[in-house]
Length: 432
Image 1 (cartoon, rainbow, N blue to C red):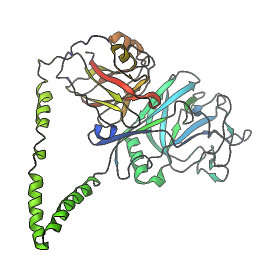
Image 2: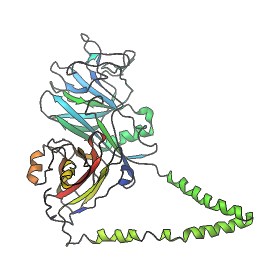
Image 3: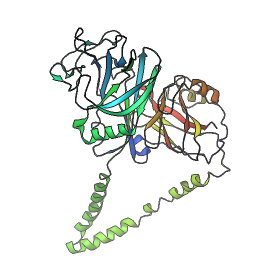
Image 4: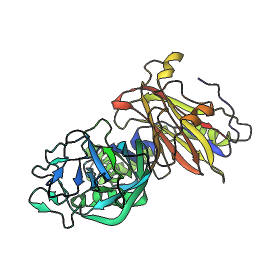
């Protein structure tokens, strides 16, 4: 691995990396990533072709095709089945893979909240799937919510005029949608699951051709909705009460009813006395040290933490803080395979990297640093910049992101592709 270079301004980039499972790792917040519960394409109705759909296909489409017909994607996620009821949603981002386009021209692609339910049948479009397939019972089509008995109020789907989020989609690759309106949408679906109909994905339809093809939940690169939430706080309170009752009960058996009151007082005193309450002496010892150390004499080459990445929510989290009045240019890396060269057992063979801001919103992600995923703070191909930085990972399966970050809290999350496990390293370097 490349030798570390000193950070040029520690006061401007204060970094404290910590490891945790997703739940406790984000200061009381939890994070979950889920795939769609259903998705489909609405193919503009043509009487000569009939009602078309693509319920089980690998792709959905947006924009217009060469013949001028429009395509719209619809997708929904099971929010109530994955987030505890009563939770507060603090961050939402949607990552989708665009796998085919008529040209690389950047086109605005919007998310709109759907206002009515819709279905998936068993239709499966052939070939590139852009022409669709004859609709089957319960399929969503341009005219139907559920083919062929229930219609949309407006052909092409009933959706809100409010744009939940938009993203400029150009060449092939992963793109990320994230906004405060998406947070509001997901919160409303959690609070009222009966209103959860998902989003309609709307491309440019004012000119032709503008079609973009995105991968569905049936594909190898399904859409991923990442939700950051805070679970309801009332639940911990009842846990405290039973403990106090349990302590008083055994003492009451030993003495008369009148003495039970006195015994309970004595027990309470005994419970408070143990040195266990004083044991938090280590905490003051640990906390002041890092807080006091960041003086001008502290010069660090890079901040890094190594840990074993597990499956599910047991991911590796690196939190860091950017301070100062000017944005800091940093490179964040997720290292795995090359750790084996240094004798590290069981290295994570294919790490992915996510970057979240202080609200928990996903603002950048990467899987294999030689392929840039556009979205959020990543607005263009970064491969050359990563190479020029001097911190390019030593293995193509490792991940890296370069970002100019304003002051604030940030979280880097490392996962294993296809739920693989192993030891990984998350690192942050100051590039100024």
